[in-house]
Image (tube, rainbow, N blue to C red; front, side):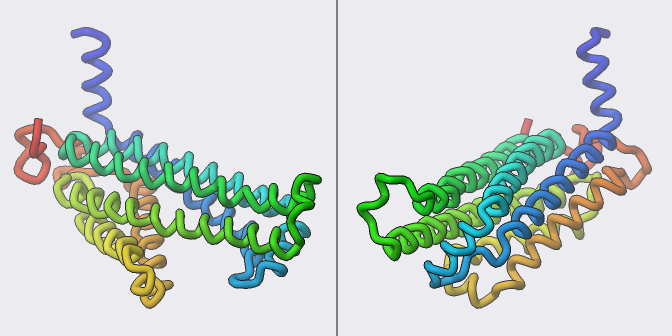
Length: 251
């Protein structure tokens, strides 16, 4: 047996370490995402350009730290996406790849939106070429960029909603994770999809957001603590011939 084939068999026989790694990276995502929100909390005042500009200039280091932490969180989620693809490709490679695609598109929109989040620092930076604008205009422009960032966030969660739906289905089809986690991820996906209609999302807020957070955190903690297990006690990925739940739907 070749070394590559032997390594492949070892990886297939012991997915638990990979599941634990996924849980660790997932937890890093949650920590950085929460920290990013904490750093930015209270700096942006809805509808008040003057107060927002004053807060950003007074706490510029916190604002930059929140932006940087948010980008690190996005990078962690990209890693989680890749790890989930590897974990679920034995269940259904096509759906696992499709789920990864939707997640990566959502992450790309988040990164693009961060440009709008950074823009107020440029607008309010006091550069000489900005003297052609009045102070009130610069403040309004800064708030407009932050509103565009919020719109980008609302768009990206729609893609994450589809991602959660697909991951939930893959959990249902797998034989190594509890179906309750799949159900939670499906409900989380439906909650994120409410952002297709902003009035509906606002009406259901914060329950739709809390549901998504709780579902993904539950999956994270399960992977971190329990890993992946089969009913017969073995820890391995789904293989062809293991039964209807674990057999891949496509080659």
